[in-house]
Length: 269
Image 1 (cartoon, rainbow, N blue to C red):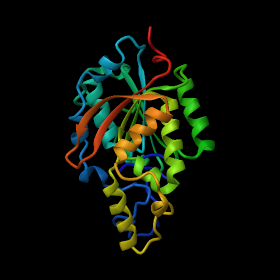
Image 2: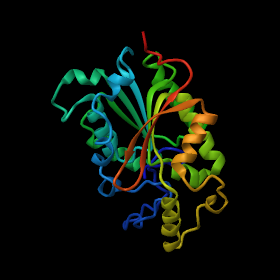
Image 3: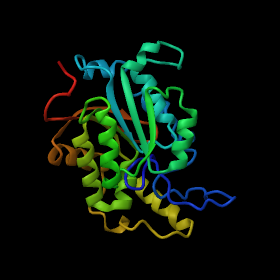
Image 4: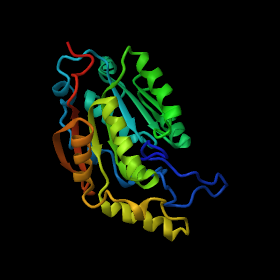
């Protein structure tokens, strides 16, 4: 759903920039240009309790820092931000911007350009084109962002329908590395894994378009119940614990909240 070539979430495959535009469905990195029409943000945010940030971070210094990987063109990022800080529109409660600063990245620069142009909260939500699986680009970029706040990690990360695209494009090792990276960067992590049926559907879409299959699809040993597999990886290999499952969206994707079992949030008293 929202991928990245190396990592972000909905990211698009390199596509021809000809006048006809990309073929429908040709988004091997999940960078669909009209993603939110198919999976509206309300279907996710309505599952999250309104006071989630206050309950997770009762004493932490503000602003909290959030990282949204694979943000596509930003509709879900903005909806998450509004829901979590209690904003319904950009004119209400100007002080809410001090509650949360959100960094959103995607592998597709065109989707990021659209997100930047339409963002109603430019002071609190930053959009950047980034392949999260490219450590040479990722490490200096994220370090620079965190240093602006005197921080070395994020309070909360969002990985919304991104894991499949990382897995298909980078294989089992890529998925393991990606989850370990997010666990190392974030105190809390909200993950919406795509179920295995979505992998098969993505592979079928590529074949119908006459494209090469995903390089790793047929060799993936991590398969089957992906929510269970990702929970096992994060809890057994990445020093996180499952705090809560917020149920499933109408399109059958679980929303899973994990917490680092290491040190407490940097900003806590």
